[in-house]
Image (cartoon, rainbow, N blue to C red; front, side):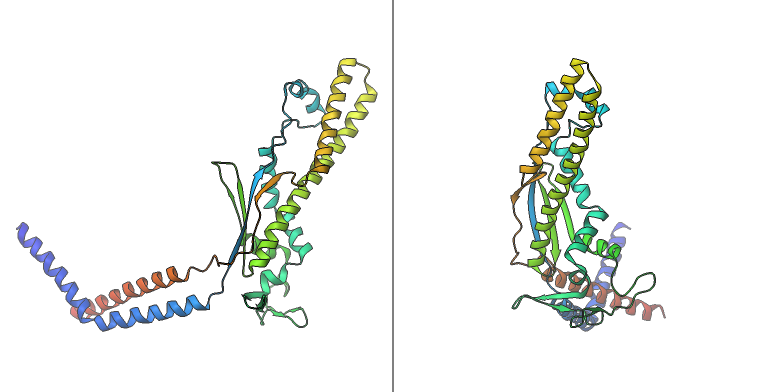
Length: 304
């Protein structure tokens, strides 16, 4: 009985092979059509380039035994003496992805056209091809049709979502470095945007720390005038010294939060699409679809 079951399976398998062979022209036709379609699709997709910048957090920790003794006084003044470089870098990465920071970056650099109106980039003359139905290059007028509350010109909310689709942040836990990447049709824009992003992020974090240090200095000086306790006055003087150091460090540092290990470059090789892989996947899917169609046709006729 075991042999009969096995022979039945062999017959079934041979029957499937015969069915597929009898439908070989269907298989060949659909597979070739899928292969041709995959080539046309791959060639029609525009190149997308990627530019990366490699960063390392700047260690600006103020930890020391002397500062540890001042922790209570600093806490009363709202001062954080233990903000290590890693914590500052983590905060900076959150700012980098924040809606406010990215929206301001888009608005200041007027990125609406390259984000929404450009459909491809010409490598020979470094020019763009535009979506003529959405944007009139000659008059600078937006023509796209949009349902309310959206308008013809994309909003900052739309621009933020579109920009974030092309930005990627990778934190390498092994060595603590960070990769910030931007993808766009133009390798020149991708390189410029990622470089400007990091520069403006550094300036933003520097301005925040300087503003906080200035407020802390004002508070500490006020408290210094109010107290006559010598021990407390010494502690306040030391806190003032540390906040002054923070201000001085921020003013003289070109790379305040992140040190640039490897600057962004204009990529010569596109990142997407992976045309060979796309063709292989579509061709294989076409072959499987063809086989499924042949089998369905055969069993439908046999059961009829």
